[in-house]
Image (spheres, helix red, strand yellow):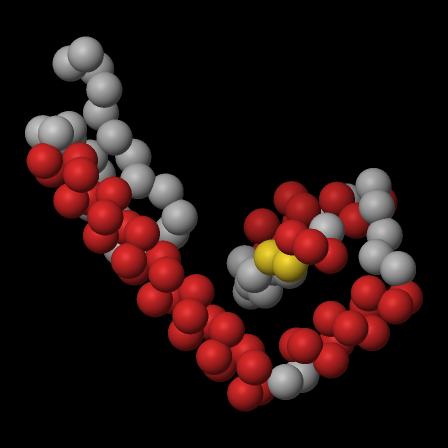
Length: 94
């Protein structure tokens, strides 16, 4: 997840190709020690993370439902998704 106020994000993956592709991105910026300490505290707080991630999932589902409802009302074709932050729409008929 991302912590935009801290200007830092996290990626957890076991995909070795993705890790290799992103391996050099950390050379452009660093995270200060105080921010690292705060984030380490947050990431080890299981109760906080469970609630935070539950809230994020609920908000994402709610936003997706509204977006899809409006697209269907406007008869705009879109790709049904199982996960992610994006809704791909087809505006070629416009």
